[in-house]
Image 1: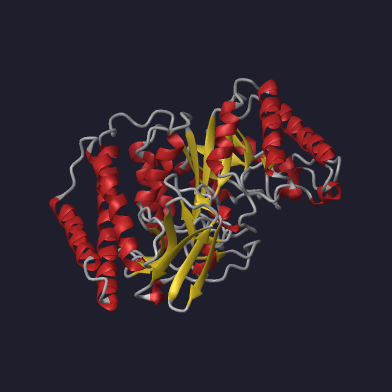
Image 2: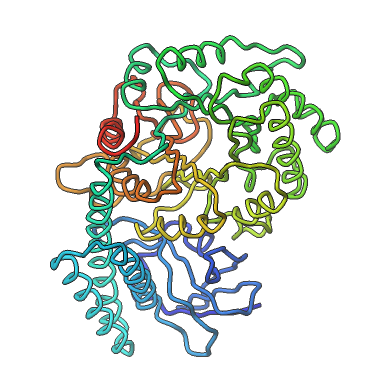
Length: 495
């Protein structure tokens, strides 16, 4: 096993449960199974690989809250690294690389933003050359981090505004913006605002609600949702037909756990019934979700992949004209740290592409700031790197986003999911959900292969998965993020 050792100047900046969430990854950012412990005052990190790698750490930065930061590529050595300094080095490296990428498109950073990057670089240089003075080096490195993150936010906003304004007279062709309706029928007021804001709705076609009792399918709610979408002029993304986690199947299916042949038969029967009923009425089949990380009836990775392949073939056979998409949650692959799984999300996707099954695109489910079922908050530059990686597959992307508007308890949330602490909000803002979406969504929409953007949770009034993640609160009142989405569609997206 490979070993890396760190001194930590400001230990209180390590996030909650940091030792269980810290990991090492290679140049592709795919995590390796990692073990971490304290040896006196030295942080010892062990991983299965002996290769050099980047260490990713939940770290609190003044003014920015807790973010998953990473070092540069580190090799093993006897002398411990200073973690504070290496995190500053890693962030500046990625920021400068992303800045080069943005400027190569013809955009130019403002003098103020460029000065911030230089200031952060000077602070890092001072920290790196004073590591014998642990306290001083740590202070300088963390000041560098705070300034670099502020610069990254400003640069990303400026670049996104420039890139989207350049297309103002040419709205992004085929780009759809929508929301997942969930298994419950929304109120008339919520429906009206969805129709005003979105040009697409995702109807879940949940197996749990359609066939709560074996052999008895109830289509009422789904028929109503699809009928309303058609009346409102919304395009329809139907699915996921298979959701590969513990909420994806009816309770009676647990009788078949361990019997893969019958499990596959029953799942494919459900898919056949749904696609046969609604073929010609939907514009996109969301064939499967959470393929990479689901715990569906203890299916192995190979069994899950085979089941998705069979489902794709069945959908294409019944409805060959409608595009199909398969989605993955935790697209950075944080779950690999536990060592229970071997395949990263992009490995599943690559296998489906190579199998030539006719998949039209892939979905990335980014439930930001949730733990353990979501993805950690990251510096803004990491979203660009993620899209770069998935762009190599050469297929369009559908992004499914969620973020929390509050850190308070949410009694209607179905699972015990924690929200990460938010940082200081921009002036005039009191909503971390809106602040996150305002920073991330415009940047994602600058990428031409991002063709569908879906908010993953409609309302907090009905039972839901992610605490305070809806576009409407527990009383069905519209949240500020709804207006942001409407503005994005009005100004930049094709209707």
